[in-house]
Amino acid sequence: MIDRTGLAEFLRRRRESLQPEDVGLARGARRRTNGLRREEVAALCHMSTDYYSRLERERGPQPSEQMVASIAQGLHLSLDERDHLFRLVGHVPPTRGGSGDHIGPGLLRVLDRLVDTPAEITTELGETLRQTPLGVALTGDLTRFRGNARSIGWRWFTDPSARARYPEEDHDHLSRMFTSGLRQIVGQRGRESAAGRMADDLLGRSPEFRRLWDQHEVGVRPQEPKRFMHPEVGLLELNCQHLLDPEQSHRLLVYTAVPGSESHEKLQLLGVIGAPV
Image (tube, rainbow, N blue to C red; front, side):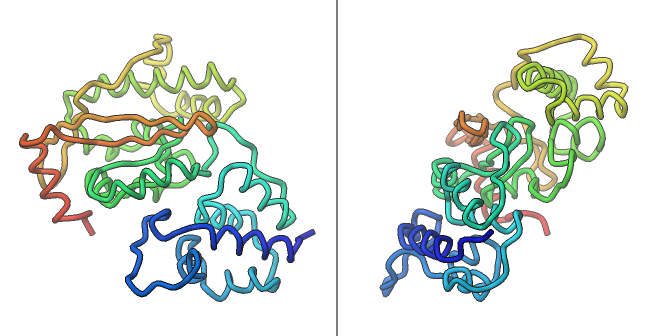
């Protein structure tokens, strides 16, 4: 059963504790609001201002689990706070683990400050949860996929277009890397996990994956620099830095180019061009 009073108070306190810069918003010169405005939180949570406002006023319908997850992410809640929010609404909190979608507030704060840098947050299965604008310009919108297709490793073996952003001479190594990475996760999580189910699905779909899976390779690392083939600016050679959130096994991937290099100039051009429409 929903605790309307507890929910309203919790949402209001969390909203008032956040500042615009905490969530990647600009602070206006005439700002007088203590914390974020309701309309700002509603936009962050991908809902109408009226819907969010009714929750703070102890009104409206019981939010769905998907809506609660969106609120938790928009308010930059920790996992403990997210679970508390689910219970206030009357739902069972999602299971924690490497396949969870909830991004920790620390990673979100870092990502929000990387406005002029290609960066993304991914799950251990290579599912992109969030990208910076320049990240979208570099690789396209990788958050649009659903189901197994959310994983770059799954798309790599099932959708030929997934390979278009990478030089052809790198494809063999990337195939080995994706297979090796998935095998390692299956070893950690078990055959009944999401990783195990994905491996079984790929074994039935891709002869290339089956051949590489049978080699039992683990520990195949990404090549440095990481190379992208962009449809408008061509080849980019970028270094990739990782920041790991051990609670959710999420990774923040940040791509940089050597200053003064041709790839650095191309990144600057991408910042002007933006993502393809």
